[in-house]
Amino acid sequence: MKTTTFPSLNEEVSRLGFGAFGLMGVFGEFSETDAIDAIHASWGSGVNLIDTARHYGRSEEIIGTALKSWSGAKPFIASKAECIGPALQWGAPVDVETCFPKGHITREAETSLKTLGVDSIDLYQMHLYWANWGVEGYWLDELEALLDSGKVRSIGVSVPDHRHDMALPLIQSGRIHSVQAIFHLFDPTPIDCFLPACLENDVAVLARCVLDEGGLTGMLKPDTTFAKGDFRDGYFDMGPRDVYIEKVAEFEKFIPEHASSLVSLALRYVTQQPGVTSALSSMHIPEYAKQNIEVFDEPDLPQEVMDEIRFKHRWIRNFYGPKVFQ
Image (tube, rainbow, N blue to C red; front, side):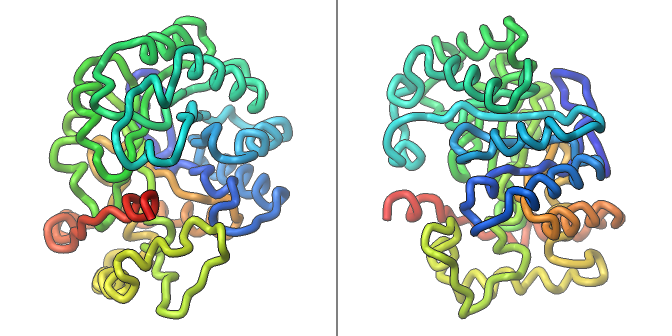
């Protein structure tokens, strides 16, 4: 597994990260035993970064169970304080007091520590950040107090949907160590200014949705259905679906000459970008973990392929808006 350095801690982390969103059950039912096996298999293969959140159902509890039966090297654990209030907060800016009232971040961190069964969390993030919150305030003071206490080792934020640029002032403030943002084959805009700013300020980047909720694996067909409650139910139909399938098919031109699969193309495209620390992918199913990890045995994509994807295949759209406001 290829690695890079997490800037503020000067520690090696895997280019591929275990995204624990799937442990919430949003991508269908799963066996907890299989999930723990997938976590252990990932850690054993060098995927040492795992990202979860208070919001992800029993995710922290399952990871805590996996930790108890793990005898290998200590993984790098990232979690997030969840905002409170209606889902509307994910679609439009609100005051920070509404999402993270005083003391909330501290209480969330304490709960995460207990649930995970650890003394310290390597990266603790706010699961939402809006630019109107500025670069100072009690919310950031709370994060820094957790840092000073040793309960967390680094701090960061996760920005909503595709509007990653809203974090630029916070990145440039020097007060955070990491930002999590959407980045995938269809949306290369982080390359323009977000990633360079993070590089310049020694801020780690956790790229999420790198397979676009699975759509970039090629699994989506005209007649594909998802169970009610599955996050993907209706997600791809906002494209609309036939357009989404057509856009994904355009990437087939790079296979097999430059990548063994669409999964390989998507993961290597993101992880090869300067400034990306780790790309998060749901690997709660052992088969998913195996497919994702094997990608990193392949050589880097040629620069001409990277450039063609960046400039000729971008499809800027925001499915999160309709998903929230429907």
